[in-house]
Amino acid sequence: MNRFKSLLRQANEVRYLRPEVALMEPCFDVLLSLVDASVDVTLVDRPSCHAYFITTYPERSLELEKRDNFTVLEHDELPQCGIGLLETRVTISCYGQDSGSVQAVIDTDVPAIREWAESMYASFEIDARPVNREAYLE
Image (cartoon, rainbow, N blue to C red; front, side, top):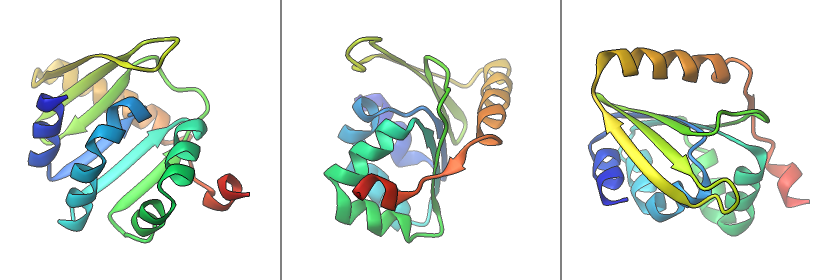
């Protein structure tokens, strides 16, 4: 987690496919500071993850939602691992299937992995939809 946080702090853009609660919740303050520093952040995750953040952190979620540099999209069928595009690094996060806990976060700067990650991210982002915040607050 410390390595992931340090990569986040250095990022000038963050795109993450399936970041999951277990990975992002410990980094929520870092994420907020990035958005405050005008870093573009786009997260594509499952509806249940967005529901968690919207209901657990309603004020912060609303504040982030109003920012032009923060985009949250949802998709019902995401890959088993998370894929993060952070500056010059790619992160791949592995989660426990039953618990959703973070089992491993791998980071690399290998160009072939970057190509794969960009392709995977784009293939899911194109079908993702904006989060309807009100639907989770009913």
